[in-house]
Length: 329
Ligand code: B12
Ligand code: SF4
Ligand code: SF4
Image 1 (cartoon, rainbow, N blue to C red):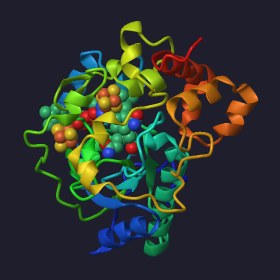
Image 2 (cartoon, rainbow, N blue to C red; image 1 turned 180 degrees about the vertical axis):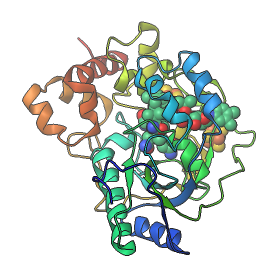
Image 3 (tube, rainbow, N blue to C red; image 1 turned 30 degrees about the vertical axis):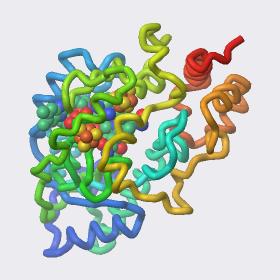
């Protein structure tokens, strides 16, 4: 019926039997999802907000965001024939303590976990329906407005910190999307918002990176500065980064929805902190990073999302953190 998992011929859209969407979500839960919903694909309601964000230059050096803009505006475009999305949220441990490395990056790389998880669900669906179901799995791996799709699938609302927040689980979860050329009964989109008059995240951001509620200037965000930025970190922002070495959770940690509803990580979760970062304060971690050579770096961060910054990026971050903590000689 089709040419493999990543590809599928146009105009092949299957019809799922009644109740199949429920079974599909149950399969996702069984494979590790904390939340799951089904969305009908189509033009993104937040496309204009996205365009404005790009036009304002808030994406900084992340040029890929503009290049994929057309597909991001309409979720039917990335996979020909796709009409539905299974959208999952996977817990990465909001009850873990704050530290110099953001929670999402302490364990295994989520791309290596969520994509196979979703492909497993796709294969399960093919087996159940007796025909290969065309589709493609994404988690931060393609031109997709994942938060837009997650809201559409009923998972939660856009917080003022821009995170997709679930009223039952907070926001410390990854989003994974499985686009399917399969007609499924969709869940109701999440239509309410529950930030109210709260502004804790906006006030707590160490670099004042929020231009307005729900609008983040990524070029000012510590997550961007420590992970995405290739060159040196602008001097004016260095001191404000304090002891943050990789990523930032501040605007999530202060959120009452996380304080109350964050979920504990399962003992066998791939997102448990690896030895090199577990329990270390900023000075210890930064000192250990500066002692790494290339081989030791590769061994310590094998299958870790922290590889993305490369050794040079981690050294840069570690140096800024140590400078801030007044320990450089
Ligand atoms: C680029 C990017 C970043 C950039 C920019 C972040 C940003 N807020 O835009 C940087 C490097 C800074 C970043 C940081 C982080 N990221 Co990031 N990132 C992405 C990526 C690749 C694209 C996001 C994007 O399109 N940004 C552009 C803006 C305009 O889109 P948006 O923030 O999603 O906003 C949407 C809505 O909020 C709405 N909207 C925007 N403005 C307004 C205004 C109003 C009034 C309304 C109603 C709606 C609205 O429209 C937008 C488009 O749909 C996604 C993966 C993906 N493909 O979607 C992951 C993703 C958003 N990141 C994720 C994570 C985990 C993080 C960090 C927590 C990592 C960390 N600890 O350091 C931080 C959080 C920082 C933060 N507060 O957002 C998760 C978020 C999961 C969740 N529950 O929300 C995602 C979905 C990856 C994943 N698959 O799990 N990230
Ligand atoms: S991740 Fe940190 S720096 Fe970025 S917006 Fe949130 S609090 Fe600000
Ligand atoms: S801290 Fe407050 S304003 Fe910010 S996302 Fe959470 S509830 Fe919304």
